[in-house]
Length: 328
Ligand code: PMV
Image (cartoon, rainbow, N blue to C red; front, side, top):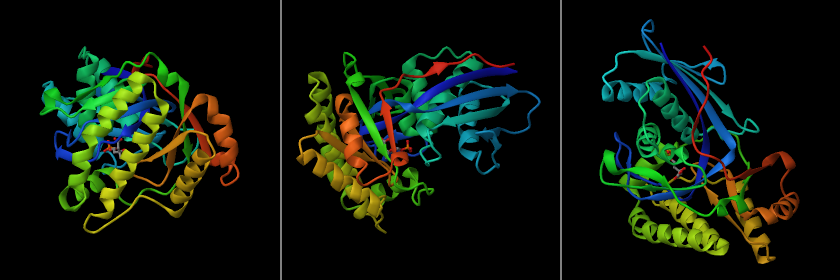
């Protein structure tokens, strides 16, 4: 038996990853940049065992069906092939999220699984290789290997596509992200399907590809200069451009709900009143607001005019992947 356990935190992209160049290897069309957060994380243990006849996966204590285990099994098969191993594994994952808000993330999940496999099989992988491994489970997972700001360089092949930490002199600790939960239903179009559809059919996708590299440079320069306004503006603009591509897809789709639009309007109004804050969204209707920590209480107080306390979750910058002691 080979055992390993790890914890990884989720990350939210300020410059989004949107579109794959290679579906199997998960190579992205554009480079991206994220902030790892402390509020949501996954702990995963893995046990490779010669007595198992298939892979098993349990999530939050519930045994998952063969179908629900498919992505995990595909990831484990990739590891078996890469490291000439012929053992199946039992994977146990727990998602730590403040509420059952549908925020369980594949980013923290696959980063934690990569870390647990690294420990169990004593692969001795350095961060860049762990990032490459996590990427094979879910693209955004490659950024959750690192705490604070991370940049995923798209690279040209499996060897060159991985994330690295962006040094920021701990500036990330002066920032926060407020999650506004507007909907807890399972999303209609997964990020995987949404990306595929926009890459293949959206007449706006070319515009995304033309602007994303400059957005990334702007974000990196803003981090280097600790310029919150510049980082916020490019975060919001880049997120909107990503969502814009979905409207040009065939058939068109959108991740926004009426409530998402309400949050965006509030953010703009609050900003006009003089409090700097900027929104971003991923493949679902919840909105995340980037704000300086010193302004978080005021932002929350203003949002409480339109939303309830339990819809608002504050996250600070979080740490990178860590291994945990295994329970035998
Ligand atoms: O890694 P995935 O397949 O869950 O895709 C993530 C896509 C976005 O969250 C929309 C953007 C990003 O960079 O995280």
